[in-house]
Length: 51
Image (tube, rainbow, N blue to C red; front, side, top):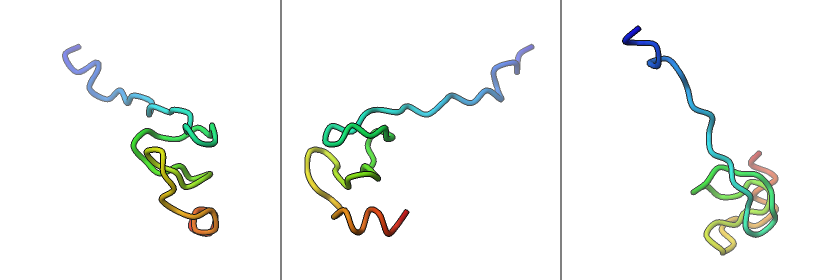
């Protein structure tokens, strides 16, 4: 009983991208549009080719 919660795994947090609205993990570059923190980090061509 002491280890009953030891092996549980929490689901990852998912938020909507501020630019395009796609669901993404927080603090990561959006895979759909390449934005992070309100600025363009990857251009759309790089974002699609790396997936």
